[in-house]
Length: 208
Image (cartoon, rainbow, N blue to C red):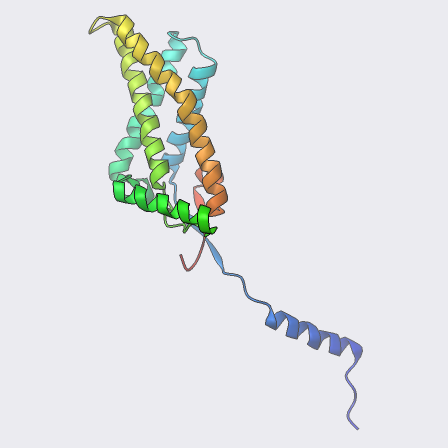
C-alpha cells in the first residue's frame, strides 16, 4: 500500500500551487538621470536664493556675494546644458512647442481618462523645462541689475533697482510653483522627483 501524504506535505503542495498562480510584478531598475554637477548646482542655487530672499539684507556684502555666486552656478549649469551628460543637455529637454503640446495632451489624458502618464521624460518634462528657464532667467537678471545698481556704469540706479525688485518678487511666485509642480508630477508619474534630484536616480520598469 502507498503511504498517504502527511498534512505538512499537503500544505506545501497547496502553497506551491498558490505561488505559481500569482502574477509576477514588473521588475524595476534604477536609472542614473541627474549627475553630480546638476544636483550640486540645483541645491546650492536653491539654498542661495532662499538665503537672499529671506535672510540677508539687500545691498549688503553677503547679499551680493551670495547673489553673484548663484549667478555663477546658473552659468555653469547653462554651459553644462551644452556639453554635459545626456539628461543635462538642452537637446534632451528643451521645451519646443511640439514637446509642450504632447506633454499637455498626456496630462489631459490622465485627468480625463485616469490614464497614467508615461515616464518618457526621464529628464525635465517640457513644463518643468519652461520653469527652469524662467528661474534661470530671473536669477541672471537679478545678478545683472544688481551689478548695474552698485556700479552705476549706466547710471539711472532707480530704474535698475525697480527691475531688480520685480525680478526678486517673481521668485516668490516661481519657486512655490516649481515645488508644487514637482509634487504634482511625482503623484502623476508615481515617481519621487524631489528624491531623485538628491540621489540622481529614478526607478522605472525595465521595459521602459
